Amino acid sequence: MKNFKTVFTKATSIELSNLQIQMIYPPTEVLTPKYIDILMSNKIAAARMESFLFQTPEERYLTMMNNHPEILNTVQLYHISSYLGIQGPSLSRIRKR
Image (cartoon, rainbow, N blue to C red; front, side):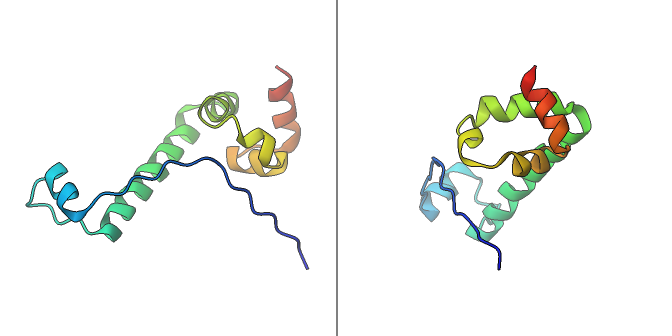
């Protein structure tokens, strides 16, 4: 049986009413909460894919460090290397630089 660890990091949550959402987006667009989730997921996935296409592993690591510095203290390095799409020894070399 594998042991799993739950890690909580700081997050910002924004709650918008349907009226507020309708004020932001034109009324011709029907945006249900599920559709908004799909749009955000696609935006995040596209940004991640672009990072793999246009950034080196070192640039991806530095971007992660700048955007989420707390992750290094809470997530094991093999998870970070997997997320960055590199092997553990490569992550170690990048961290030494």
